[in-house]
Length: 178
Length: 278
Image (cartoon, rainbow over all chains, first blue to last red; front, side, top):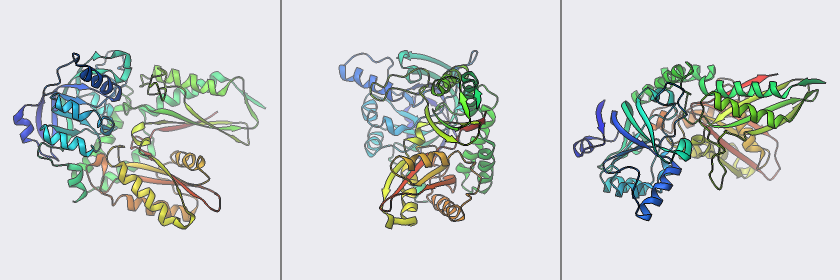
C-alpha cells in the first residue's frame, strides 16, 4: 500500500503503477456530469474557472446530504465513463488525476498517457465507508446543482487502486489477461 | 372491502425508503460473506470484506450504504378486496419525498431533457398489480444508475434458444465491466414482449439472492449463467477474481411464437430492496 498526497507531484506520478493500492490524502474537487458541462462551457468561453486545475485531482462523486454535525454524507465514486467526453480538455488544462470507477474510453486513456496523468478507481458502492475519509468538505461552485455541485474535499487515507498510469498501462486490461 | 388510509401507505413507503438505504438485506450480506470465503484473488477478497464493512457502518444510521440512493422503483400488489381512501400514487410519492428528506438521502431524479432535478426524488416508478385478497404488499427498490445504465434488452430469435440467452447475458455483464459496481445480482426477464421482459428482469431482483427458482429448468439455467459470468475475470470492483456476480435470477412469461425477448437488468452489490404488507 502506497501513501500519496494530492495535488500530485511529478515524482509521485512517475512512481505509480497500474494495480498499485494507494491511500490518498490531500485536496480533491468533486465533479459529476452537470459540473463537467459547466466547466467545459467556462473553458470554451475563455472565462475564469472556479478553481485552478493545475496538478489537481478530480473526484467523480455526488454525496448525500450531510446529517447535522457531520462533515459529509455518503460519498463513494460514480461511473467515470460518463465524464469521458469532457476529460481530454481537463487534462489539457493541467488536471493530473481522477478518481472514479470503471473503464475509460480509448481517447481518455490516450490523453492520460499524453498528459502524464493517473486514473484511480475507488470502491463503488462504499459511500458509507468513504465518508470516514473526508475530513473537510465545502461547496466551491454551482450550489444550484445540488449533489452535482463542486465540493472541495480534504481527504485522508482514501483507498483507491491505480487503473491507468503515466506509462500507458491499464489495470483492468492486465486483469483480463491474468 | 378493507380500507387502508393513504397516510398509512405514505408512512410505510417513507420507512421502506429509509431502511433500504441504510440496511443491506440479510440474504445479500450472507451471500457476499460466502463468496468472500471462496474468493482467491487478494484484492477481490479484500474488496468483498470492505463491502461487508461498509454495510456495518451504514446500519448505524449516519451514512447511507451508497451516495447513489437511487430512483425508487415501487411494486404494489393490490388486493382486489382492499381500497385506499385517496390517490395511491400520490400517497407513495409523498412517502418517497419524506423518506428522502428525513433520511438525508440524495435526490437523484431529474427531468430527462432539461436535466433539472425535481428536488424530492419523485416521481417514483410505480407498478401496480391486482391480486386476490384484502392486503396491499409494497416492495421498494432503491435503484442506482451505475448498474441500471448497463442493463439491456434484446429481441432474440426463437432459434437462438438458451445458448443465445446465455451469450446475451454474458456479453451484457462483460460490457458492464467494472463500471456498474460488481459483484452483481443479475435479473433476467425472458419472454413476454418489449415492455414485459425488462419488468420481469426487474421483478426477479426482488427475490432473495440465495433462493432457488421453483422451476427446475430455470434454476439450472440460473446456475449455469452465474458460473459462466464468474469466469469473466471482472471481479469485485473490476479488481479481478471469480466473484463478478453473486446471483442470477430469471423470470419468464409466454411470448409470441416468433419472438424471444430477453432483458438483462444489472443490480450492483448494494442490492437494496424491502417489502412490507399492509
